[in-house]
Amino acid sequence: MSSAAITPPIRVMIVDDSAIIRGLETRILEADKEIEVVASVSDGLRAVKAVEQDETIEVVVLDIEMPVMDGLTALPKLIAARPDIKVIMSSTLTLQNADISLKALSMGAADYIPKPSSMTGASGSQDFRHDLVEKVRALGVARRHHAGVPLISAAPKKSRIEFTKRERPKAEAPAVKPGPRPAVYKDKPIVLREKGKLMPSVLAIGSSTGGPQALFDLFGTLRDSIKIPILITQHMPPTFTTILAERIGRLTGDNCAEGVDGEVVKEGRIYLAPGDFHMKVVVEGSVKKIKLEQSAPENFCRPAVDPMFRTLNEVYSGRVLGVILTGMGSDGFFGSKDVVESGGTIVAQDDKTSVVWGMPGVVATGGLCTAVLPLKDIAPTVQRLVVGGEA
Picture 1 (cartoon, rainbow, N blue to C red):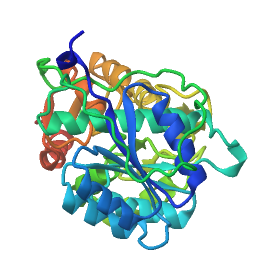
Picture 2 (cartoon, rainbow, N blue to C red):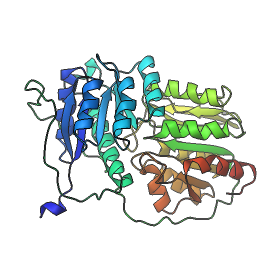
Picture 3 (tube, helix red, strand yellow):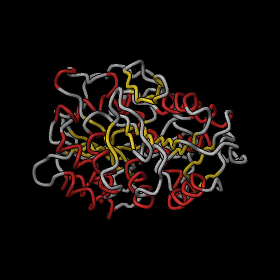
Picture 4 (spheres, one colour):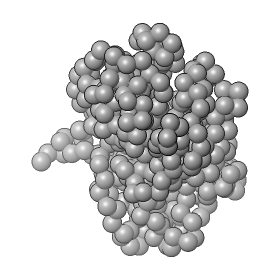
């Protein structure tokens, strides 16, 4: 195979004041042949200088709490230096850091990942290893796609910035179980279908990478105009979902909260799946109630979109309007398929306005959507479909 046919690895910089964390993340990422760690630095100021020196850095894993310059201060400087760079915020799982991470997303960060706790051991948990690799890979592919960079090109010369001998990885990381690859951006056509025959009695929303900001934009327009129940599954860990629900609540008149097991589903109320729980809806007598489960992850996720869509489709007999927003992977595809086959309707975010066109891409190219729209057009379309049945 000639060098011109080699797919260059995604080039990553790790920014963390802990040499242990830098070494751990380096070993995890470099165990994947599609990823190359080219810089490892201990504070935000060094990160900004590294990006200015090396224009080939594509993805940055950025700690929040660091000396000299913290992650939130460094973030806008990194984006100013390289507007196309993808930044993943990394933090310990606390309410304060969750709030800071969501603020970072509103400032241009693409995603977030909770650091492994000390309880997971030196190698990090399996979930952390899987999530770190998948997020870096998905964002790297998305950056190249949106920048118009061919996914097949000559491999760049390998270089590494500011590694010290002590920081260099000395052992292979435990293998990460292979997961589904993010959608490769092919010219697969979008085939639209007519809207479902049934008027929606519930609005279901699924999102992942880039989802929090998309949800803020969506509900900033919808506010409290939708009077049917709204259920949201956003791929997020505990604590993060608590803060996300509070922020959506501020946009909708304190009308949003994490779902509670056994809670009655009410008209005009917004329910967000809490981290680490699938959120479903069941019927007890004639009453619809939230059911939270810690059953096995689906599509490597808990909460996952598919079980929410699946149970809503059953309980509401197909009277479901589903919206799939930006996110990596394919969660939501099978649930959306159930919805449209039962007479419901699916709307998806378009490629151009998605951070990663994975989840919306699979439903759009799978022939399940009535509309594939820029984010700004989704709220008006939802309003028309709910109120008048028109897309």
